Length: 293
Ligand SMILES: [Zn+2]
Picture 1: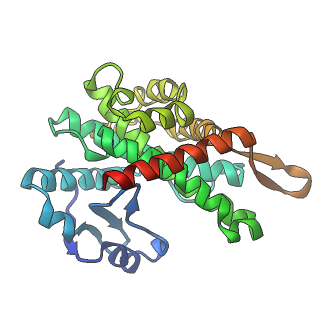
Picture 2 (picture 1 turned 180 degrees about the vertical axis):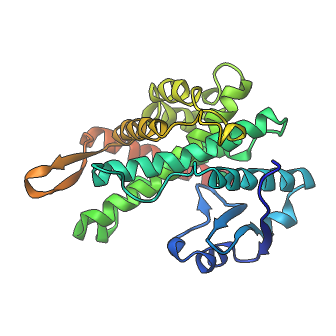
Picture 3 (picture 1 turned 180 degrees about the horizontal axis):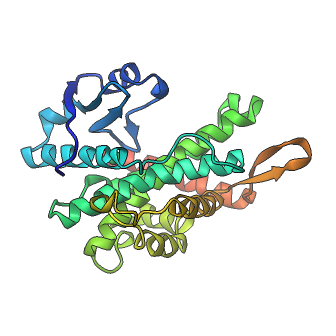
């Protein structure tokens, strides 16, 4: 994308390499739904490094590798223009609101980059294809149950909250990848029409009407090629935070302020019946996948 220079490093163990290069990413994981991250860009005061998963380099075509590098260059461009979501809280911003803004802001970076790649003529990202989206929806459904049944979640609500936010964060990125493809003319009915029956049931349940709202917002966000022009406003991070709050609610969780004790609460808001039907679906889908494997 004609952006600042960076070193490109191939790593056999991408996860450890990322954690080593940037100590703020000590909990970084490369698992995303059913797949693995192909590359990660690290920007520190000393250097910009694109670390590529060498497993990906062995398996992917030249064009796919080029696409990955172009994508990571997009992260560098956003970084260079100060348009990456800042990790610190803004003045007067509540802690939970900040968490949602950060979650949505990182997903939005993916949207801005992917949208530009489509405009430049690159093909669809695997992340946005039906099979992968189906897998991500299943991972979301299972991830919520894993968080709910983890013994640590019962002892520590902040642990529980962090696990749920991680699951929702991964899924928000998938939605923004889909948003980029959808707005680049994937056609009517995408992505629902490309999902199998489990995927569609999960989509209706976890996304549904949220999709139109999200797409309408994404359509107003300039792609990465317009970074540095002032068209991307900080207000957009707040708007995405509001959308993530709605997505989180669909997934079954809410934040509530508790000003009297100077903190906030994180609650599950979901009927036992809805929880049961999601669990049944997760189980049925897992068994169906296993019998196909
Ligand atoms: Zn990215």
